[in-house]
Amino acid sequence: MKYRMWSVLFLCGAAGVVMAATPAVRVIKGQAQKINIAVESFGGDANAQQTAAVLASDLVRSDWFNYVAAANAEVIVRGTMSGGTLNGAVFSRGGSTPVLQKVCSGDGSSPRSVAHQMADEIVRNIAGKPGIAQTKIACVANGTGSKEIYVMDYDGANVKRLTNDHTLTVRPRFGPNRRTLVYTSYRSGWPDVYIMSDIAAPAPRRVAYFPGLNTGGAISPNGRQLAVILSKDGNPDLYVMDLAGGGPVRLTRTRQAESSPCWSPDGSQICFVSDRAGQPQLYMIPASGGEARRVTFGGYKTEPDWASWSVAPEVPDICFSARAGKQFQVFGMKSRTGEEMLLTQDAADNEDPCWAPDGRHIVYARTVNHRSSLYILDAFTGRTIELNPNLRVLGDCTAPAWSR
Amino acid sequence: MNTRLLTKISVLSLAVVLSAGMVGCKKKTHATPGPGPSGLEGAGPVSVTPPMDTTGVMPARIGDPTQRNQPPRLAADTVHFAFDSSVVNPSERPKLDDMSAYMRENPNHIITIEGHCDERGTAEYNRSLGERRAQACREYLTSVGADGNKLQTISYGKEKPADLGHGEEAWSRNRRAEFIITGQ
Image 1 (cartoon, each protein chain N blue to C red):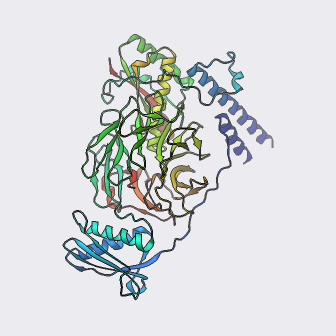
Image 2: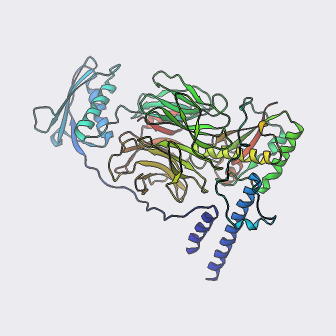
Image 3: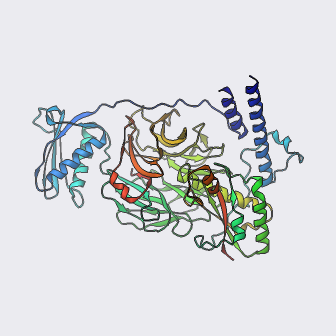
């Protein structure tokens, strides 16, 4: 077996790589503490029971709660629906005074939107964590015969097609709010970067259309800058553009391929992929320019995403996909220590991971027998579920993005 | 023991051949002044990131790359690549030399080089790798005298395989750069 190690060392040495010890890879299997919760049947109008059911589903999807019978609950939710408004209240077991009271009446006031609002209030106030019930997921699907971008609620409901470009429309990423989306489309014939400032009223604006490749757009946390891959100067490199105007500032100068930038939550760093050392690896560079620092070693590692919120020290804050054996799996890395962890481990290609704003859940594309669908991973427990089997009518769903 | 030693030696020589190949390649594309023609002296320090020149700057876009117009001669010049590599192999250079001759014979033609990848790996990294492959062809062509202002690139990554199969045979056909005429 020794010669294998030699061959790895020599081949990498030839490509000019400084080998570092390969970080230990392990699967997180910790069981996070959950709160036992019950939702009693809601009183009020005809939408009452649907609202209660959506709320219960949201609480389970948050993974901070176990849904149990009222007799076993530590916390009980009661509510009344009337005229599209939910009067919700949360009680601790045996308590007669609510620990949380909330009137929810959203725009349009569908039963789903008021349930999502109530769920986020409960997650924030009872579990003390950011909720995700009002977030959106975007993805690419090919069911029309072209690749188009779709957006849906975080639980896979309310699917809507955002583009009608009849070509390749790919790599959606949300901006710092839940409305702005950046993506790449070949609708001009060339790969260009577009921004929709409000997905509720899609009006794409083309923001990068230089000669050659324009892709990988990622909006900075303050919403003012765009990290983007351009090849206008003769090679795919990382650039930063001011969205208010002005030319792109070049951050990398290599003869190799750069791709897939994402921002640190404070906006000071950009994590991206480069194959300058042979195979694709993750690098970090100050967003204002400077030296790129390699942060992963060995293997084939791509598509980083940096969580906007870090849920706990034992949970990684950067996710990426990497080859593990013959397949691709979702990995995590702690940005502070560089420690890598294997997060999925099944007989599939698990790629293109993207964090939810709770820093706990990851959406990714799972491919088996060349068919792809979206899955959700709980990075605390390693548990994975298909986002929504109904999405298969869209065709292959890939390249998911979770709103911040 | 003996076989192990032999393996080590063969791996070693492979590494030497590879690094020599890389040095040779760098010299070719960047015309770095270097030691004599044997090339092996290049085992000395090699600049990992050669200084950028400005010849790589791309011309303004011309034509519609989706209107495929690929005469048989250009189709025959499709350049193939090794896995995860954008290095133009010596075996592929005659095709680029033919492309360069075609451009001399048709000096007004605008050529778009399409870069493509096989299906393995993520879409975005492959989009950059495909662009890199197209750019590597463009660099070679300009190094042998072609007019860079007549050469533009587009990458489709792994989105447009030439062969829809899923084995190494299909993959090797899909790792490619194709040449189309998008203007004159």
